[in-house]
Length: 299
Image (cartoon, rainbow, N blue to C red):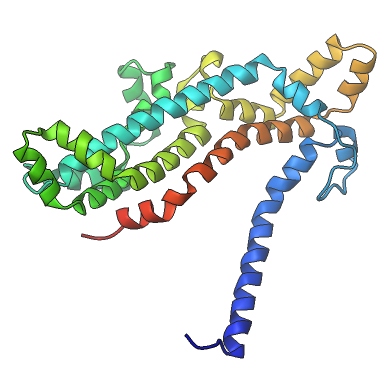
């Protein structure tokens, strides 16, 4: 390969500079939230806080992590993410495996019905009434059962499964392997990248989703951590926590309470809620390109 010309080098430099600037612009709001969470709230209210804390403190984290409502909501989110991801990946992949077989009766009709739901949905009120009639309203199951099947993920799974050589399954059938045996013993071991990639996407969705709990759940003990964060952003929980801290603290505790503001608590809750799902990315990053690219190829 020949040496790059001056024009190519300048173009590469421009592309890398633009990507670096775009990355910094995207990262800065998250970094600024981290700085605010590590800075005294009264100092933050003075303004001018940019890339480094002026008055470093962990009091904001102590207050948020001492709130029992946070840990209860955090536990609900962890349980919801684990159960929802497992259910969604299992049922979606099972449906996709059936629709990937040419011998499946009515396969095209099922695909048309599935794709139709991607463009046209029942709407909020019919969905609300439907879930209430099913007995899911104000229930833990409502946090993930309505998303047990994702049509988009089903299409990705289906395309991936169609790329598996038929000879592997035919050999297994000769050895006496049934339909479920083919799925669990042949398909699953060969589909690690797409399973890992879509599992992460589903986990991020269930972790970040807050609207359903706000509509279908009235029990405070069933609200996930994102709804806790929403209450914090609306200043309801933040003001209540400050009132409790100011009412129970004394001496040095009063000084701590006076250094904390609703904004500092909001940014702290934002960081605590965001970090767990961010920490998962490095462990599955190597599956991203392979899993998504293979699963997105056309027949």
